[in-house]
Every structure is written in structure tokens, then in C-alpha cells.
Image (cartoon, rainbow, N blue to C red):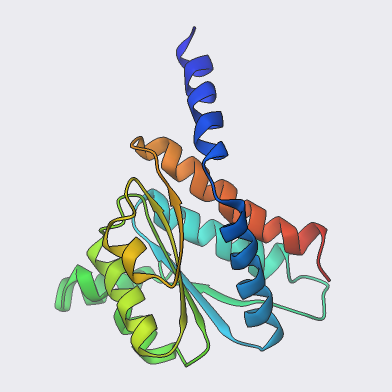
Length: 185
């Protein structure tokens, strides 16, 4: 078997481990946030930061354009000046939580993405979301780490390979986004 064939075979196994009931619950939370005019914040590092940005774009454009019901979603990863100011002047651990302190309100939705489940800045964002009365959702890998235990809803990809974890996280985000693009009004 070639490497691409092996990778795809392993990815199929990984996808089959996604708990679709939890994805359906996440869809319900996103619908409720949208319908109530609540803010949605999403964050992650590295590949997870790219997933956060991609997901926010899918909801703010793909699932909102031309529709009466629109998403109020912001990827906390997208303001490079804010990220670098906090990283340089305070610490990298606070880059997401400090943004939430400015914008998050009770009832908002905070989503953290971390393959390891142990990214300190994402963990702090979810801790703050819980304290502030927000709903908290995590996309994690491996054993879920600290993040999985803190989030009110954890969609965990129990897979050791970071690439397949990130692939599965993007698939979960597409399941959520495309529900609103293809099925919901």
C-alpha cells in the first residue's frame, strides 16, 4: 500500500470515531447562538488557528450571505496586531482570554480547537468562557487534554496523529457550517 493509500485508510478510521451526536448538539448550539444574536468566538494555534479562521469565514460568509439569520462569529486568531501586542507585552497565554474580556457576554459561545487539548492560551479562553457564563465547546484530539475536561461540550478525535486530528477537526467544522449552508434557513 502506498503512503497516500495508507493515510486515507487511517483517515477513514479516524473519521468513523467522530461522535456525530455531539456534532448535532454543536449544530444546535450554533443555531441557538445565531437565532439569539449571540457572539461566537473561536480560537486555536498553528493548524488549529487556520481551522478557526476557515470556520469563521464559512459561517460569516457562506452560512450568512443572502440570509436573514446571520452569524456573529469572530476568530480570535485573526487580529495579528492584537496577538503580537499581547504576546510581546504580556504573554502568549493571554492572547485569547484578553480579547474575550473585551467582547464576551453571558450566553455567547466560545469554541477552542487544540489537537493536544493542552494549549495554554486555548485552555484559558475556555476557562474564562465558563466563568463569564458562555457556552464552551472544544475540538480536541488524543485524550482531550485539559481542554476536553473543561469544555461543556467536547468533540474529541481519539487519534494520536496530529495531521489526522486536524483533518477531522476541519471535517467537523464543515459538518457544522454546511448544515447551515445546505439544510437550514
